Amino acid sequence: MTFDDEAIDWLADLLADAARIEIMPRFRRLGEGDIRQKTSAADLVTEADVNAERLITARLRERYPDALVIGEEACEDNPALLAGLGEAALAFVIDPVDGTFNFASGVPLFGVMLGVVVKGETVAGIIHDPVGKDWLIGARGAGSHIRHAHGALEKVRVAAPVAISQMTGAVSWQYLKEPERSRLARNQTKALSQFGYRCAAHEYRLLASGHAHFVVYNKLMPWDHLAGVLIHQEAGGYAARIDGSAYLPSHVGGGLLVAPDRNSWDELRRELWAD
Image (cartoon, rainbow, N blue to C red; front, side, top):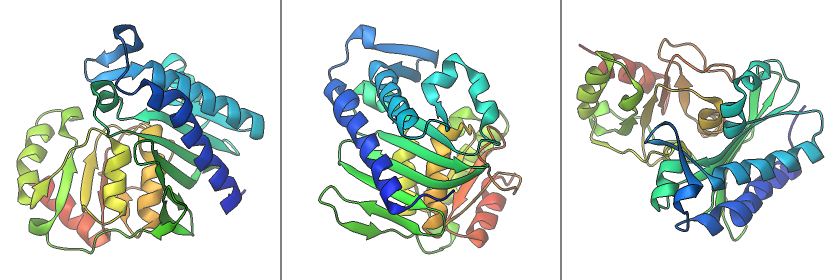
């Protein structure tokens, strides 16, 4: 099964509908009862997450009744949903509000992410920015682009390779264990500068559009990475797990290093993990 432009446009508009109906009306208007902790004070869920996922899931099931639909919040209640992702003929993976900590804090850096998986392979990825009202979209074999609010399409391309001393990047070290945590925190200073948005949606946008060079993730939940990795690859980039193996939709561990190309990946793998 392939996804043509019409199908991708429908999915993109669905994410925008969820943002318009369930997310933006709650932005900077959340009450105490609208925010809950999951695993820690930095891992939150809001009524916007729950209701946006519910809307997206319902519409996907109407249009694609035989598809597997996996949402971040649904998996919180039923982790067994993930088991079918690698084998499903068609699956949709939803992050209704990526960057929930920012959203709950009133910071306008969050996004809605959707990955489309066919028989274990990601074939399309969509990241919607509810604040900017645009989309970052990638389709396997067709490249990646920004669909602007006014309708224009802008092709995106990853940054040109440079020495690590000239790179801008991010290391998500808060999810790492020692001694790797301290090693990467120290070695990331070999780069020119760092960023950290607490939002994979915007971090992948920065990378795919050529404004940053690399990112290291440790936690690999599919709703955080399927769309972004596909978009980044279609923009010319290279991504692999820390051991060099390919990242697949079924993976939830093993870490991830995202870089402009394979040679940059090799240099980053060597320098960031150096003793």
